[in-house]
Image (tube, rainbow over all chains, first blue to last red; front, side):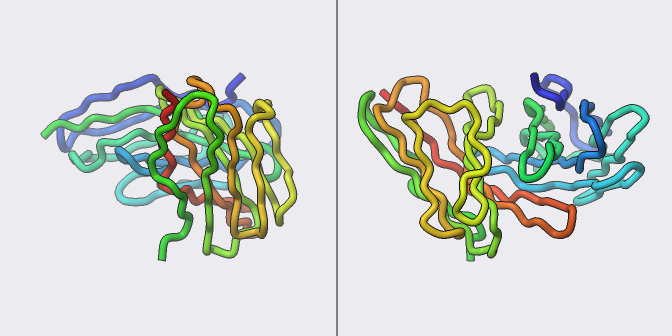
Length: 111
Length: 114
């Protein structure tokens, strides 16, 4: 089965609200962890990543911390904007060359 | 100066036809991928090539045949198209910097089989 689990969406928030999208993973060893964002009609774009335990990835106000003890990589943003509306994918590496993606979480931000 | 490009962007065709999707990356990466994204946004890896050699082949029907003429190109040919092939197909390439990998995705090809 899929070894990256994300919270189901859609997540609907008002502008300037705090965002958390949960992601947990199962793995042997220490995979690299990623968040990708997909805007409507586009491909996935790397949002942030972390390659070892306790690393914090950050970009565009989004943050996620690699938590080995809880095998989590939750995405957070302090104040969302309408332009953040998209589908967010958590992912991890699986050995060399292979990636495993979560099922995606749709975020809707209302003005 | 698009990094990963795909053609066509949209493809509408009849069941039973054969079609190809092309992908090119100008990032100098050695590894390229094809993914299939279904209507629920679930993203599944199909194939991966490293320096023109197949390294990942997930359980994909034989009707799907990837071809990599050089490391900057990875094309996907699909024979005898079926309704269930309707999806968005994404090409990606990977930068391998030490132990750190980052994938760069193309804009997607939206395939609709009628």
